Every structure is written in C-alpha cells, then in structure tokens.
Length: 289
Image 1 (cartoon, rainbow, N blue to C red):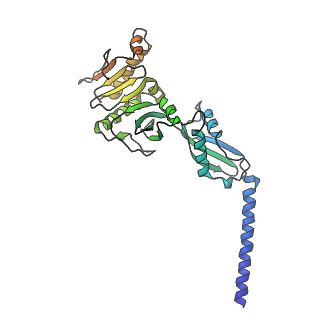
Image 2 (cartoon, rainbow, N blue to C red; image 1 turned 60 degrees about the vertical axis):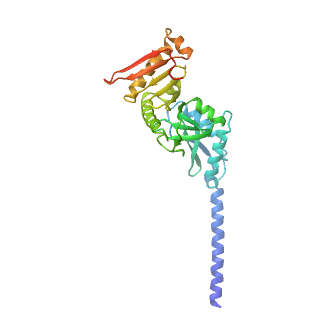
Image 3 (cartoon, rainbow, N blue to C red; image 1 turned 180 degrees about the vertical axis):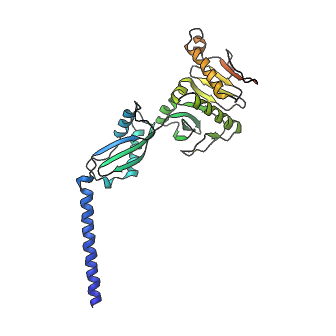
C-alpha cells in the first residue's frame, strides 16, 4: 500500500514538473527578448568594400519571409533557405548569381542570411544542361537546364567551352573541370591555368565568345568580334594567350584594322617556336571553320 502511494506521488511530481517546464518554455519562446527584430544578409565570398555588395544584399533581403516579432526559436532554417532560393529564381528578372547557403540565429533576436555570389567563368553545354564553373580552380558551381530562364543570364556573362567528351565530375562542388577525352583534359588544364592568370571573368567574357578544345592538337578561341585565335602548342600558353589577346585588342581599337575585326573573319595564328620565341600573325583566312 505504501509502495502504491509512493508511485502515485512520483507521478504527480513528474506531471507538475512537466507542466512547469512547458510553461517556462512557452514563456521563453514567446518572450520579446527572443522575438526577431533584425534580419540582415551576409555574402561569404564578396569583400565588404565591393561596390556591388549593397545591391546583392538588397536582392536577398527582398525575398525573405522571416516574420519580425516571431520567436527566433521557431525559425525553420531549411525551409527558409529553400523559400529564399525559390523566390530569387522566380524574380523578374531571375536572380541566378546568388544562392543562400545558411541561416544563422544570432541570439537573442537577430537573423543573418549567409549567401554566396556566383561569378561564372565559363560553362559547358551538354545533354540539354549548362554546367557553370567558377573562377579559380574550375569548381562546378551550378547546373541549369538550357531552357531555364536563369541559364541565359548566366551564359551571357561567361565563356562557352566546346568539348566533345562527356563531362566528368558533374556534382556541384566538384573541382577541376575535365572530360572523358584525354586531349581535351590536357587542353582544359593548360587553357584554364593560362586564362585565370591572364584576366578576370569579366575581361574573359569581353574578349571571347567561346573556346573550342575538341580538335586534337589545336585550341581555337573565337573572339566576340568573330576573329579566331589559333594555338597549336601548349608550351608557354599563358604568354601565347597574352600576345594573341594583345593583338586582338590592337585590332579592335585600331581604325586601320577595325574593318577586319568587324567583318568577323580571319585568324590570329599564335605560335611558340622551338627556340621559345612566340609570334602572332593575322591572316584573313578563316582557319577555324
């Protein structure tokens, strides 16, 4: 009988304790101290003094649905990230160069949206999809359907790399762009190392329309004016590209040769001799076609 009474008392204590804990938790969750009062955006890969940072932050903050005054404890990070990225993609025009990666609760009442800015260096179109690679290390940063409205805006700011082999490492975050064809892998490694040393993604897109790695023994880089740079040696490729781009810029800016460039014809043949002398010669012949 005494045992039964003891068990009954313990049950009552447990119930009382649970109610008290529940009420305490409810008070904490509903407390104004933990009510969201500030939401800000933070770009993890753009410097604080970048003039575009304020506009990037504005785009992110315009799409969040975090309620001010709601408890910070009730925030669903995963759902918030998904909603933010959906709204960014559905914006008019679509915002495809931003992706939200994390939501931080900065206690007691602040929320920080962590995002990255994509800076597409080049892309490869294969099987109805566009694979976008980042500047520095050729890391795959995004895969979009070619029919996707957002793909067009990203492609406009990047250079197309033409290959015939199947792309390897198609998971987002994979590093070192490569294909299933050996000579394309070698060409890609040499070309990307040279171009990343030569210019920024913006400059690259200003110079070139696309770069063809599919022809064994040759690299063809078609400029956005139509003239093609031809390379047949991978030695000192950075110096070769530098000389070829320098000649192209002279063509583009010179009144004497501007008509050639505007016509969209001709080839700048860049050679690296056995003696290590690099030369560049213009011919009106379309050697790429």
